[in-house]
Length: 197
Length: 111
Image 1: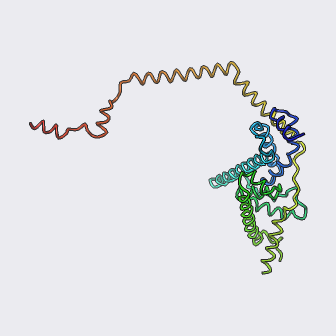
Image 2: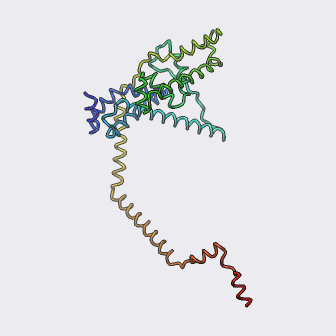
Image 3: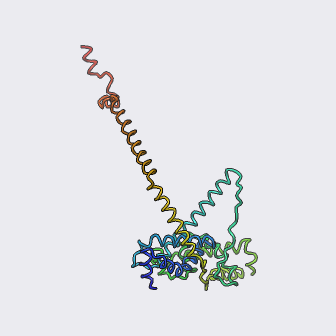
């Protein structure tokens, strides 16, 4: 069924249209979310939240905008909110630990293995994901949408509501920062297995 | 030099490790879960709406509003019955220290 008809039906609260929309775009939303959150369970929760938001606010969706751009925007915003919440919790736990014994054990974030990466690249990709996690929000958004979702600079500029040249600059800076972090990583102790000149 | 080349090579390989990545697939039962969540939220909303429209709740809210208004009215009228503490002139005089004896008053006394 045509995308516009589906959206119009969804605006009237049609459950079947909603099902078709979820089935058509769930992988797009999930893959974007997992790229940001680097955790399958969190990505699934965010995917659910995104489609609930779609169901509730589709009335505000303007037909002249691209539906996928709108979906990406909701996903990115929800994923970044989730990361901020997690960071706040972590900070709060740290402050709490300063004022007394904290019974909660601090668990180091495990290496993330994206399910869509070839086996021989898994180890390197896990290191790269660690580095991506340290990027500032806007650089992370541009880099993730480009690398994980394969969006063009033009498409990313529409999602992020900015110019193509701004996206070029963001991705260039992201690459510089990643190179810096990876250089430190490979020169540091954690790299002995990888770095064998 | 050799190490630098090696490091540069490693960096490029790592940065390219996401090339050719396949899209991760969502849970096949995602829609069922979303639907369950949607129904749960709708039920909660309906329950809240049902609670607010119950006659007991509506009557209690009405009585509460009347009680707040009555208390506000009586506290206001009590304030109005009390005499004003100071007039505006007195306040002005005390503010600018004008209530003491002036030179003009002293000259009048000497005469």
